[in-house]
Amino acid sequence: MTAPVIPTIRPARPEDVPAVVAMVHELAEYERAPDQCHLTVEQLTSALFATTPGRGAASDAPNWSSRTTAPALFGHVAVDAHDEPFGFALWFLNFSTWAGVHGIYLEDLYVRPAARGSGAGRLLLATLADICVRRGYRRLEWWMIDWNPAAGFYASIGAEQMSEWVPYRLSGDALSALAAQAATAGTRTDDRPGRVPDRGDEA
Image (spheres, rainbow, N blue to C red):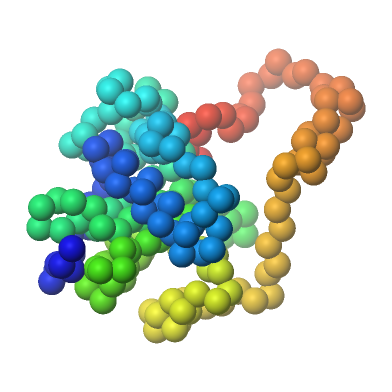
């Protein structure tokens, strides 16, 4: 495709999901881990719109609008003159206990090679920055694989590398083993009101 002169950024819609899923797999290929990417259209539709395809997903509304079950994942797309997506940002809310407010964590940002240099990546980030400012969020954060040449671009917009923080992850057998400790310890049942995140819990 020919890169548009001025990309348009808008909230993702249900009809964008197949293109976004395809681009997620392209990103996994670029990051040399295609075998680790298993995302499906059904999974992303459910995560973004808290629904299944064809069941009440409002195609003309931003995907953070009110629904019976609030989505936990949000998305924006960069589209061409024909409204076809060629880039995307998928993000969700985190929370800073020190600042006392939410922030945005950017899970993935991707622009197809033919459209790079169009400014779409910068505009996707600017859109998320605008959401942060308008809603009073204090941070826009993301991780980047260490060899990604985008490091220079991120530095140019004022993003700081948080080298003093080391990421940790529990998954697979280690995650299951730790979860089993909660079960064997006999987690106490408490009928008093409380808030436990569930599927589709935004905050």
